[in-house]
Amino acid sequence: MKKLACLVMLSTLVWSGCSGDPPEPPAPSANPEPTENANGSTPQLAPTSKRTVLATVLEMRQGIRDRQLQVPWYLLPSGFRDDVESLIHEFADRVDEELWRNAFNSWRKVHAVLDQQTDFVLNLPGLEELSSVEQERLRNRLVEVAGMLQTILESDLSSLTKLRRISIGEFLKANGAEWISSIEDVNDSSPSRLGEEWLFPLNAEPRVLTEDATTARIGWVQAGAEEPTRDELWVRHERSWMPADWLAVWEQVRLARRKLQSTTEPLGAVENRLQSLRQADRVLTELTAATTAKKFTEIWERDVNAVVRDQIIGQLRTWAGVETSITTTGPATDESTTLTENAGPVPITNATQEDYVTVEVRGKLDESAEDVLFLALEAAIAGDADVLELPGQKHWTSQVGPVRDVSAFAKRLRVGRLVEVDPDNRRIVLEWTEVPGFRSLD
Image (cartoon, rainbow, N blue to C red; front, side, top):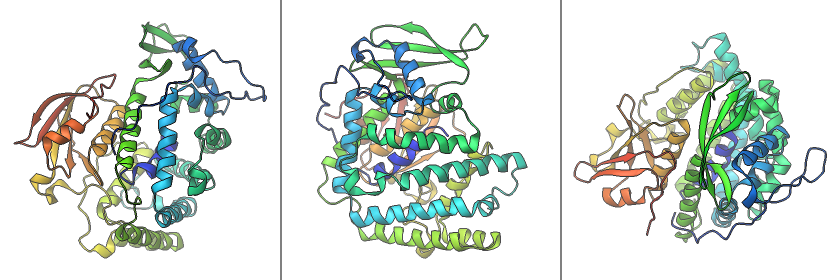
């Protein structure tokens, strides 16, 4: 369930292809916004400038356990919070009204499919051989996602008018507990279990392993153990502590603001996108109305782009706990049978060499680092971008496009350290750094 709620919300924002350097963030406040304890009282928080990294970690964890997601939000640097809220407000001011309305109509039908057709989903090709344990795990995850989607669909996110003035802190205060409850309902999870999935390990206490003025390494020690079973890097920025990899997310938000500010037309106001949404709506309507698994699968295979099918099945198998590596079979050639016009990465075999660049990233990468890399590669391309990871390579490698000028693309990459830029062979090598080092776009 890692970062699922955040990805669902952010995907609706980043999907539009928002780009460029925003103004520098305002000076941070010395104190986070006040929040309430579970009993309704207002906690007495230390000023941000005086809060230690250990106090920050403990307060974030307690906020999640108390079902107060606004607590960890307000403990993040004010510049981060300002940039995220500004991006959302600016996006809502610019997005096409019809596109947004149709997108949420499609999300409602996705919810209907997950909520009403779970058995048919479990019978799709690529899932039918799952064990009973894997099927039950996937069924629970689908119910979980449907519940979270329902919360989003009923929230202020569905209204552009409300989105233009939304306060993330108030939004989390109003909806965070419901999100946590929807996860607990299907996982029989305690708040501490949720903490493990979202940020903090279960049944472990934090220990400061190393610390200086700007960085700290936090180890998590299980009950009865002497040594930590996991450790992570935190950084101090604008007098607040945050996980190091969140700095990369921050940079993607700032880059999205720059892209957004550099455009003049309403976002998404193109007929082909509206047509794609109308077509997706039709397919989802038919899937929802299917009365047999055979009919559901027939619609799925006839009307959903092959690349999209592979991506969805791969994600579902991951949720079921199955190690999987899906090789795309290529998009359908008949435009009438694609779910969306530009759905999913175009297989590299169908693209010309001049359209793509190979990016190799050296160093130890975890799932979070890979998420950041995908964001950074997509953000470095104006408009729609394809990022296709290549399996079986010595280092993490992807092919990215469309890229015409390899050197200019390399300069726009905001993460890692540039090791090699080879325009002739259309190849870029990066070294991943634990604390992402962001290069200026100037």
